[in-house]
Image 1 (tube, protein in one colour):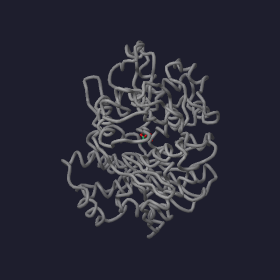
Image 2 (spheres, rainbow, N blue to C red):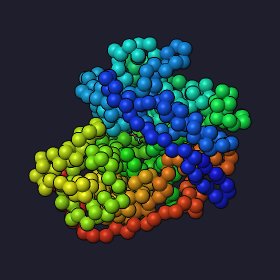
Image 3 (spheres, helix red, strand yellow):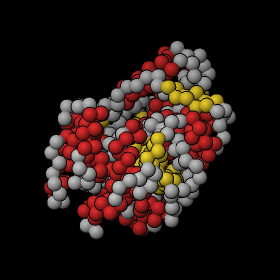
Image 4 (cartoon, helix red, strand yellow):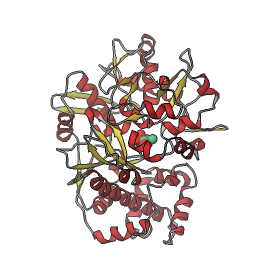
Length: 462
Ligand code: LRH
């Protein structure tokens, strides 16, 4: 994505798009990270001469380098099964309560801490001298310089959200060598210059600086929420739905842990207090199982299916792994004594109702647990293109939804670079620029709140 930033303009254009296909090898699910790097180079070539580059990606995953700086194997996908049953082993050393009080991270089997514990006796880890999170790895290949960007580091579960530094005590008790990580970088810090070989390969003239942005895609997306003031909730919708609040301090209470809220680190001292919800992954996996029908007609049909007939818990990690998604959704409906959705339109409706319900639960509970009331829900990311999901979310939350921008992560990435280069001011200035320049759609809440309460009770037994 190429961003162009002026005093009163912010434009984004797509230079190149390439798929990110996980690969199933005999050892498990892996990322084709060299393919991704090749895609990045193609993208830079297509972008033409630029003044600055920044990289963000999904969180938690990493590549290991040996003493020569060479990549040791393909990075493991966070949906791989290797973390099954690992959490219990970790909690035997550091109880879950203590882990939450120290790191503020919600339990997710794929947090880097559990992945490293799962890999403890692997040959790769034994040979590893360096661990780079995915955006830091791509940045390293572009610049030759290593660092660990803070917003993404906070998803490892090895960072203390109060000090915004490593959690040395937790790492040492779990036998995790923090020396594997390169020094921390703040979003906005310089991350080197494109290497001469890279410039030659993509046909650009140097120097081209690379900036550490909020390299966790969700950090960048939240930076691009076009909010005014503090009384807003956000939902970053895409493969995941990340629903919650922006706070200036973490919430580390036992009640918050029990509700599975996370405290990830954002720009400028902010905390992303949110819950991971399975998101449109549920639908993407069904669409894959159905042989790739077109989304437009499917959503229109789903809009005609009676609302809230069956709902599943879209926060349930049982839906994490790929495969058999329509069957798994049907099984969850059957097990909770609800009508079983059969046609693709019925299953789609069940998914969208369930997502809206999960959005409602996350936003209600986040407000209560953080003591931070909101008046509006900002929906950003790919899901903003799904009008039915946006409307259902407004209805479920009983709050207006402002949808857009769809490419929030790319815009947040660009804004941090623009700030480093002196083109925009703080987070608030960036957000005002977004509000003035990006198309946004407003959805007012309709319908009967009691129906959502009843559907919620079906899941909570309340
Ligand atoms: C979204 C995301 C999310 C993480 C998950 C692994 O892309 O970064 O914030 O929890 O991927």
